[in-house]
Image 1 (spheres, rainbow, N blue to C red):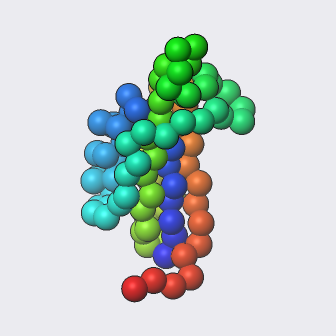
Image 2 (image 1 turned 45 degrees about the horizontal axis):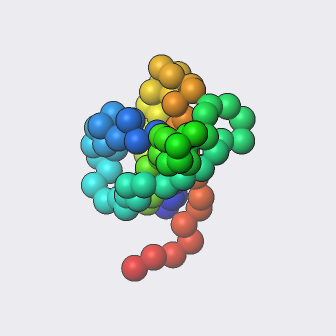
Length: 97
């Protein structure tokens, strides 16, 4: 099993949820409002007067074979507007209940 942590400009939510759906991901946890600044590109998302946009994040745990297709779909979405910000990170899950 793998965990995928996706953090993204809030405007992407309605495009990310279908990516999970077409990849048969049912379970996830969403944080509606998170703040941050990317390490490479894009604008800060701090919810402030100077940087008013914000991010959201999703965490899901999936079977190993689902990771590559999900990441490929997310890369395609990110390529549409790299300034908005979309990142995904994958961790191994050792145990769960």
